[in-house]
Image 1 (cartoon, protein in one colour):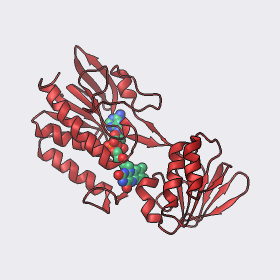
Image 2: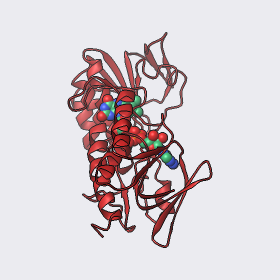
Image 3: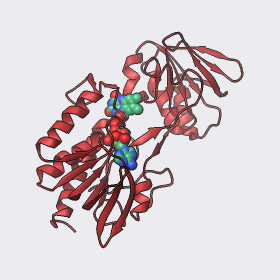
Image 4: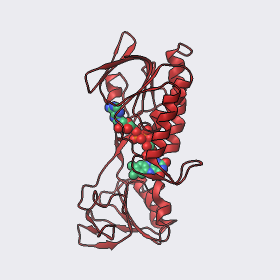
Amino acid sequence: MDADVAIIGAGPAGIQAAIQSSRKKARTVVLGRSGGSAISGTELENYFGAGPVSGDILLERGREQAEATGAVFVAENVGSASVEGGVFVLGLEGGDSVRAKAVVIATGVSRLKLGVPGEKELFGKGVSYCAVCDCNFYRGRRVVVIGNDSEAAAAAELMTGYASETHWVRWDLKATEAASKRAEGAGAIVHGSRPVSIDGDGRVESVTLEDGTVIPTDGAFIELGARSAADIALDLGAMPEIDDTLKVDASCRVAGVPGLFACGDVTGRPWQVAKAVGQGCVAGMEAADFAKGAKG
Ligand SMILES: Cc1cc2nc3c(=O)[nH]c(=O)nc-3n(C[C@H](O)[C@H](O)[C@H](O)COP(=O)(O)OP(=O)(O)OC[C@H]3O[C@@H](n4cnc5c(N)ncnc54)[C@H](O)[C@@H]3O)c2cc1C
């Protein structure tokens, strides 16, 4: 299949990029299995003009909008990528390939898991991976924030403004002194032992630490960072950052590879739909212009 713009990833960033690209009359294809987006199965309450709203409904409506303007969706992930004579060639897992003049990488991130009993079973029942997203649900309740870096410290600090009691569990401290002090100064109760389980009968009730401490709680926020799916960029000649994200300029261009753009979570924090959609808008328009020769 030939396209002007190929978008890898059918989450909010990729779908918004498709809406913008196809409205500019660029032949646009969106590649990726459905269901893999970070907002699948979630409820958003901080998205402009639409909260609370189901992530799956946003994805479905977005896809309909993109299809209505001509974008084509192929429900297969990209397994290989190369540049041949200035054209991007993307290999799909089913064996077909797509040739495109411009590519938008919108592959998101995968949140790092703690890997303890109860984490998976109680996900969405008190286990959360996003304090910024879910803080309001824990107004006046007790929470445990789990993580070692400055982002975890910031999450603990944030939660002190909502929860009646905030515990910050960190066992391999990597947060800056300033971030740690802000969390502690805001009232977070610090524990220095690794969590070994998240417990509860149908909902989170406590977090147990290696040193035997049991912290009664209503929520467990796992703030360990994320791994991005930026490998495709390497194959296309772009170098991901040390944290595996893709650095982009204000036009969402990836440095060093003309015609390559990125948007959404894969470009780094904040991991929020509003930012993903904003960058998707820019990337889609810029990629369409590039493919049609309007910009070099
Ligand atoms: C539990 C949870 C709750 C959240 N709640 C909120 C909230 O309330 N508010 C908010 O603003 N944000 C929230 N977020 C964050 C939000 O989901 C993300 O910021 C947003 O989904 C990012 O969009 P994206 O398109 O960049 O990535 P994603 O939505 O993750 O989409 C990336 C897509 O790329 C696909 N992909 C990956 N590799 C390939 C490949 N090789 N080929 C093809 N496709 C590929 C993935 O399968 C996926 O479909 C939440 C996240 C989580 C995990």
